[in-house]
Image (tube, rainbow, N blue to C red; front, top):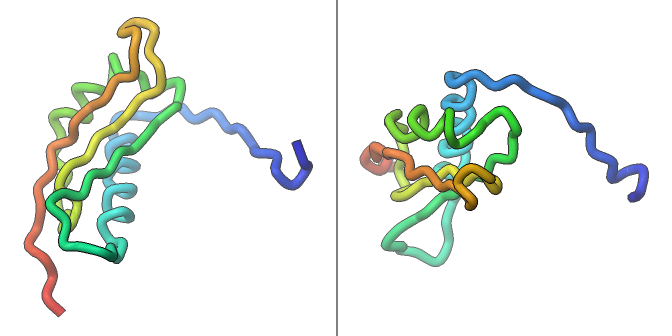
Amino acid sequence: MRADRLEEHVYRDWRPVEVLDAVRERLKEKDSKTLHGGPFDEIVVVIHTDEPVISPREYESVLRYDIFCGLHQITVAYVFFSYDPEQQGYPLVSLQLERSPPVSS
């Protein structure tokens, strides 16, 4: 690996409120993009996490029952976890979205 490509690995002990805030931030960022080629029937966002302390067992209920508001474009969103040996698969949590009417210019 080239020296200019080395990544710094930092451990973070996430708390539920921080995870929800990070998901909100990423959804808002994706929702603010200018999309080309529409109109689209759906806009789907998948947020992947590979954080060791954000386990699907602990965070599925935190993510599933929160409502993510203020989105204008995104119609469907998921959090996708890395392989979970307990579930023998890749857990996927569907997020509840509350869309806002489009902002007129």
